[in-house]
Image 1 (cartoon, protein in one colour):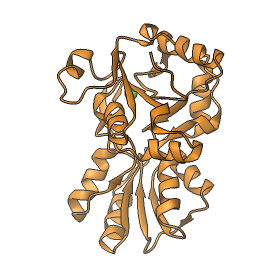
Image 2: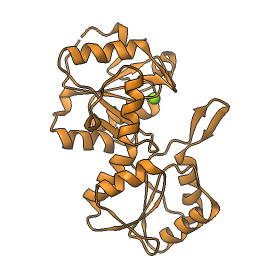
Image 3: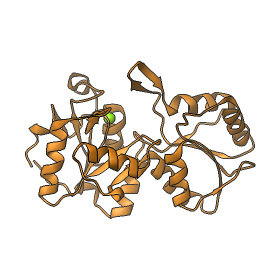
Image 4: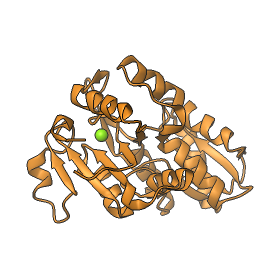
Length: 254
Ligand SMILES: [Mg+2]
């Protein structure tokens, strides 16, 4: 099979399931590292900081440099920094997003922001949503880390960031710019930061509708693994196929 320079892994459902590592993925990552290739990790999760993702991977036996971990929060901060230089920002979100915005020296405000940025916030309340709606009606651009409607928890599906963003969209009539997968912004940022050619990049993921479509939309090769959200039989019915479709990463010859 073709060799790539940038192996871009989704995390949940691809490298691990919740707190459990997926052994075939861990073995594959170790094999890449043995060949001197350090993979990248691309997650829509905006709650965790790079360091928290790094520590989670370390517990599973994966050593990952912080700079190779891209969350939708970091991508959002870089997107704002690129597209809205010197803008003031009002934020709904957790530590991951706050830290990412601070790292880009973005100025926070609680009144008349240029940009309203929204990520998952476990302390969300009515007044935060209300104020976000007012900011957008007063002309702030609306940017959301990701549009995931729901995510699996032990008890069932929990509301994802996209559900809250849709609520604000319903009130204001303004659709957010979503940064996370399936939109190609995260892959574009990774390419920009590292100077890869598109033909040297491979997106690896379990979710056709986010990971694989992000890769296809960005114009790079994609690899679907049958270890998470989208079963292979559903992928095979899609109009646009991933470049490769395998059961798990043990089936990939490096
Ligand atoms: Mg996944």
